[in-house]
Length: 133
Image (cartoon, rainbow, N blue to C red; front, top):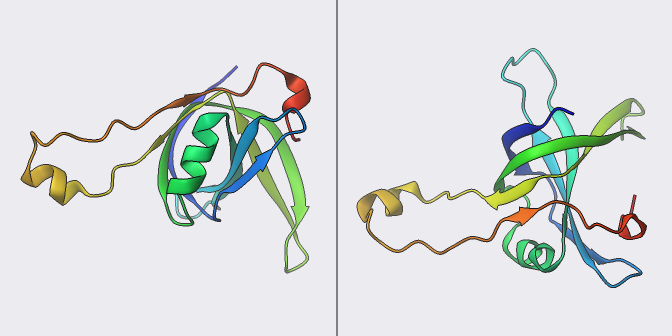
């Protein structure tokens, strides 16, 4: 199976939910722009599970940048757009999610400053009954 690594922008505020089994899941709507400007942007969603889901939901908002590593396409969903046309969305799983550091000027001005340790999330839950899609 192919896996992908990319940096992306969150297109809506994160949605934090709880499964019937009590596990936290945070859904992130994302946009992956193509390098070739003639091709359309790829829209998708990333689900983050467990305690890290709650942490991300509290720190991220629309416009936040994240780095997604080792993503696998779990499904492709069609939906009706507001203009009546059909759109396609990728559902991604089996990944690592990291918050992108944006304040490069502050880091460059004091390279020895201690940076906060950002947690990394790895993969969906082992129990398929808790997957909300």
